Length: 461
Image (tube, rainbow, N blue to C red; front, side, top):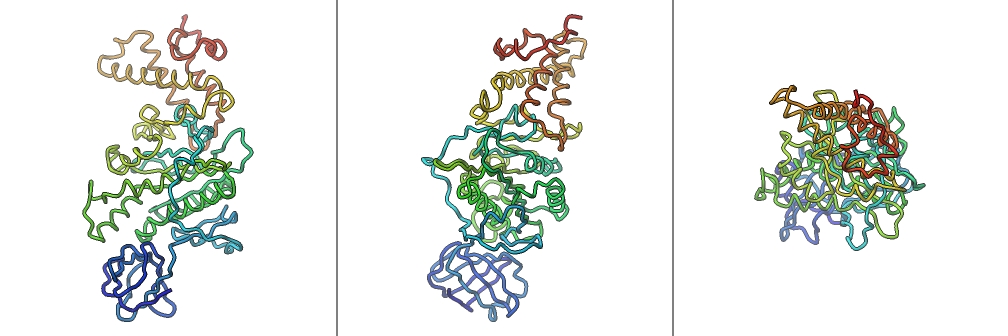
């Protein structure tokens, strides 16, 4: 450990220290202002004998000629143990729930490496979220990275809490845990999550990391790395199935842009740093399944798209790295259809690997394809009726319109406190398809039609 009193400059949250030796990038730093005032930071850049330090706290009160900087010779780490489950941490990995400190723990560098593709196991186990629009149509699979694209004012926090409460891996006796990381949220939102998890008992299987909006930008950069480190420990050392929910990644990207501007870096698209894709990949690619390990790490990053723009750099780059996306729709939310999952543009690229006989049910794939096709046809017919008038529709067209309306009201709309198992969701899908004649079920094999389909007698009226 080396101490210096050679601060040259203080620029916002950055300190420039001169005449340093053997300092490494990302090294942990302690800043001593007075005897009882100790702050921490990390090395952001090293240039010869000068180091730029990013503070995790305010730079207020720092006087260059009186402040001492101590380089710790190690990167930022997190204390991990099974005792983390049920506890609440801040973005720096400090306990904030008022409980006792962890008695036994291990230190883990939060800057873990991405998972080696050669050591990955292919995701093929179904995760039941209890939400029909996800379980049936955009199935989540163990080890998958499936982001949720939302918008300002949409209930993504409620959806995140619902998944944290309800998610489980079927037909597996391995323990299940949730790591929840909130970034840049308001005090009111933080209170919602804590109250919701405590009220429903979800906290008993959850590790929470809470970063508030008034916390420093650098803490928002560190918080997801803290959460991923905790999730990796539980998944690959304690052999648990872990879902990591991170909300809101847009605030993370904004902090990345803020720090990049402080360093006077050349901006990329819309002012975001050119390395944002690489930075996001270092987070997302730490999820998955490892060969020889029974545990898994499944990631659900949530991001609010600025102006609901899917081409914005944050959702755009996220989509390149992850395996699909769940999209929340503003029109559905206005119609009080919650959770407002827009199933048509949503996509889970691994859904085919986690469904079928022995995983969900043998008719799942066919039913899923038919529901997609019928709902898309119904929405298209509804748009046509709004232009040409309902009188221009045939009897079959009108039935498709009724189907799409019923699909939204009964299948997608289930509320944030209804937990449907996969059998219930699949049966509900067949019930809705009974509104259409059997001849329209062109994507379902006859054996499943004979077993599950019951035609609505009103067709013969």
